[in-house]
View 1 (cartoon, one colour):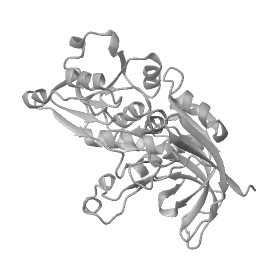
View 2 (tube, helix red, strand yellow):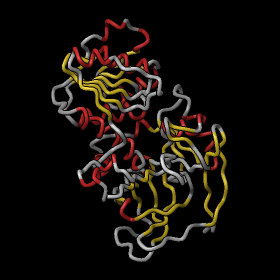
View 3 (cartoon, rainbow, N blue to C red):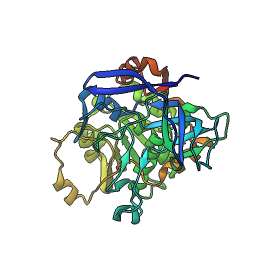
View 4 (cartoon, rainbow, N blue to C red):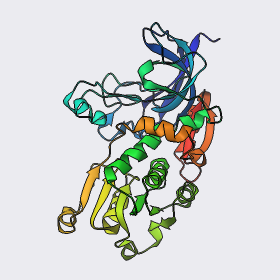
Length: 344
């Protein structure tokens, strides 16, 4: 076995480098994992393209990657939940469990959150785009079903985002849901809305490939929103989920959501976006945020391992970690990919 680990780091915008480091040794209640599959997320792309995600700016080399599966390679003293050779889903959220938000059950809003692959704290929370890495055993969920691939298991984290968005949307039974943006999170929101009993799910985008992906995961209808008149969106949905992180997409949500409806903001918007707050008032719209996921990670793992949802249509390509630069370029091309994964 190799005594080194290959590590992918973003040093600055468009500056991604690979290096070899000494294989880490697990301490008490730690597990050394081999990377199974790791999905390149929109936030990973933002760090790579711009050196930042919203207010989170890279201040030291950052290892990206927060949606991953792994194979247990070695265990430290006291580990009882997993054994070498097991395949596991990895929860990237490390909430403190002690602050007022954690005690209130809002773990995703933890004051001391340590979220892997993020520049939200300094020193940064280093992620999982490396061939071997350490993880606390509490973050791991074994997946015994051999027919469920490591790539599918790695989709538990983005599915949990869709589940949380739908939870924030409120009851969806018999409702019409509009999802703006047919990327990974948009498609995960489609799957989640279906689980929640939505009667009709519509996905809108400005490109054909994302809409094809949305249809493959169960969207009833897809719209090229750039090819229809704004009036055609009027009163289209009871609930809209903005998953594109785009000002025009958000404006379409306001146009499409019926009076008394709800808009869920999932995408990360640029700071200069303005809101039509008079519409919120006069039409009694609820406008709520959905940040990462709370308790939904284990739900997502369960849905994937039982195939209550099928995430396989979203996995566009898997490239070895050594081709990380090529993988990031492919992931940035929405015309060629939905979810690109790095594999160990």
